[in-house]
Length: 279
Length: 286
Ligand SMILES: Nc1ncnc2c1ncn2[C@@H]1O[C@H](COP(=O)(O)OP(=O)(O)O)[C@@H](O)[C@H]1O
Ligand SMILES: [Mg+2]
Image (cartoon, rainbow over all chains, first blue to last red; front, side, top):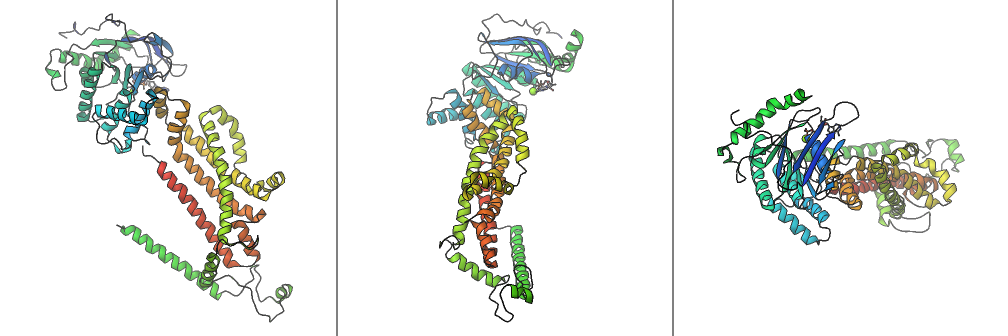
């Protein structure tokens, strides 16, 4: 590779400022025997940073996200956010679940309002509704506010899920393959909306994806996981493209193809070698 | 727009109904007069025993044909709520008495069973502790409780209500526990990440999620309750549609018995239809 130096894995510790989240020596096993799903996973997330985690399916990406969300307990290691250890779910971390998880008996606006009321219990009924509608507008949903999830398209549902996570104004947004089930066109639209909102609100995001282009478009930094079982965090790569990148123009930026090739090469070849070579 | 299918079904229904009437008419018109006790009216010894010398005129009605039934039904339904003492009350009054008993016993059962089902569905420990009791109590016929209930409650009214309560309890408990226990984890995780308190979780996540299953249990329970109340009233009642059936049987008024039987079926259908409508209103598409 010609440009390998520029893309060499950076050191795990960022010393620009105090990190928002510090994950150290994280390990997860299901059951007592056999190898762990992953171990020795350490990384940090800076405030306002957009971090994408890429890896093959089954390597434990969702498990890491669920531990960050506080929905699962790690078998070893710690997650520290704002100086406090995470050991349960909380409103300061908003979760967009893999495959929209909307409450099917509530309309779109009611689903978001449910979250608004949880975050701001003292607001009046109309204030809650207004806030819910505001966030639905933010994600580009205007016409289908009173429809039930079953009556919405996949893209609309995912938008509601994102609005629900945003409306609680979390310190960190956790997204588990949010666009995996969407067609390319819808995915592109929502990605761009997400990028705009995050840029405007300085939102910190930790997102799982298996789409290399999505990671390059959205992420400030890409974490690469090797294959399971006993997966490791193999590399952490800063995105050299300018933050003003868009889906249409980003492949004209210098460094795009180097980055892309590097990521694809990792997924195709090196992700399997890491665990075999190191262990 | 009425579809071809439903029009066909309607005509088939009419044909079946007409056929039924025809069979009824033919079998009642041609059958020999029989005593309701199954002994041919011509049996001379029986007639003597019943106090009829041979040759006296027959006043007793046999099984009514459609025409006679409709006439007597109209008469009975003319003043359904008249009340001239325990042995002469209108049929509407009797259905009302049964419904009141069911409302109390079944209402109590719902009030007890739904929270109990939530507890069992949410706490595996409680499920395991309570399960043996439920498994033993559930298959007991409600009528088997009657002697014990009569002895302990010493009150026919309370006894009927208890029978309703005990027989509609179990399906509601089991369905509620099942519905609450199988609420999707993801929905509960949504509530957890939003730090939703337990009261809101129960009322706004678990209850709506499990509502269709709970109402299925309530429909089963109500069906059993309506079956049981008729039998219970036959045994110990002094009012109610079950008592009415038995009373009319003793009066040898088969028209009224038939009318009551049809009314029992109709009322049961209406009750189930009401719960079915409720169920439709809480059912959600995933
Ligand atoms: N609740 C669980 N019980 C047992 N094994 C699990 C559970 N959840 C995940 N796993 C296993 O852990 C591994 C990683 O799962 P997951 O975190 O969902 O991976 P990914 O999101 O990267 O596809 C998989 O092999 C999966 O079978
Ligand atoms: Mg996953």
